[in-house]
Length: 424
Image (cartoon, rainbow, N blue to C red):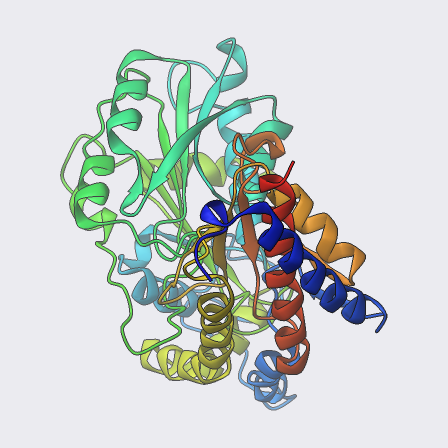
């Protein structure tokens, strides 16, 4: 068929009738399918089951820096865990803090620390209006953290190379109330974009008028490749080393989508100055995180090669799922002029932009048919997508047979919403 926009209304009405019949047939099945969040499916979780038996009563719980990892202490984590995360992130282990199970929790604590203690002359919460740059489409929970603290979220458009750096550079150079930027630099949530070398270098070279400006570098998908042509991300710490911006970047990651979400290990990489500041907070917050879990992960993986081999098992599960999603979109929607989407080499999502003004309708139609998606607008600050067009698809959680049905329904809903828009 030609593009919907160039099709006469009579033909579109006939097409809509066929789509409505197919939609009703799916709806009658009483389905309950979920593509809302980027959660690993059971098949992925099973990959790490052997980790559960790594620790036994006979395990040696003494490490080079801890007499007994079952006890209190080691605020910033075991040395062996810092070494492993340092290798994953490409930084020296002295610049690594290993925490609990959640990198999001560490990012929340970081924002809280900067609000209450600051990293300059005054804490952020004593400086009046505070703003944060939010590349969008982006991660809704990032935007939720800054909004929770009363920080004003400022939308920055994403390009195929990362945030629009012309806008970022202009804003930070003019407005001292802008204190930071959220970044998911590799396989961004939801578009799966990896920042170009130029974007990384321009971020590293920013000249913010606010001297307490911070880049929150959430490298959640640093080793989460899903095919044989993985993206390469320039290491921002290599770029800022020896410059006046060494304190500007705080990097985060976790094993939540490597081993067990909720029972993984999170880590932060930062300059010595930033780590010293954050430890002042953490020393009152905890006597030490779960060192048994750190030990379990290190004994299981042994080294970076072990982690990368483990990720190939995840790839074997995820690659056909992502291919099925993008192939379905291509087969059902290509050439109609009603949607375009990303085809990422890694990460956890596929981002699709439907016709302007249609995203909420698509999500609503899907829900009525038993398919739960992330809410329309969630990928923008305050849940407000100015075009009402972006939808995040999460292919990882549903079993394959459910994913196939969910995608069939989704494509029907995209077509129905487009025809409704065009025939108003």
